[in-house]
Image (cartoon, rainbow, N blue to C red):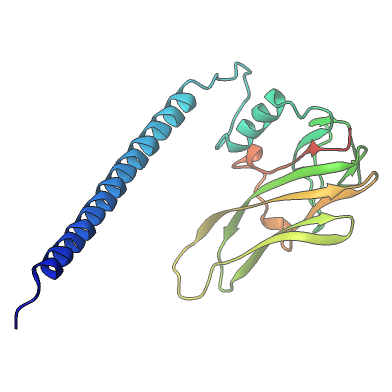
Length: 220
């Protein structure tokens, strides 16, 4: 059975057109992928250069342990959000599940009362808390918690169990941290509670136990 010449030519042109379209899509996809890879490489280079060129603070602080939280303080000092912010280190005299803080820290436009930060300007606040724990394991597990409270309500919490049975570990250093973006009214309070306050390590890393808030946005 023979096909008419016109039918054969039409089928050949259709196949050629389909192949050309497929090749065109393939080339466009390849070019787009290459452009994406190049863009990602440029972004990574710029990020590395920016990190390397970040100015170092000249303030001499007697660091002991790490300096992550001290970097947070430096960032707050350079940030434009200076209307209302606070940066406090945990007190060494801990005797309750509600943590208390050293009042000689940095407080601007925020009050402090009985372990709680008291908001004086309404708006959206970033709330950051970081704690270091040190546990000498015995024959039972220990639950470590960190709870961020707005007024009397727990808004964010972290929980970890250490010294689990079957794990041969004598001493454990554990970091817990939480952050929260929340709208706060005038006289709203921010506080931190832990379940086993006796494990909060105020000796090894004294600068790593901090509570910080800053006003991110308000109605002004």
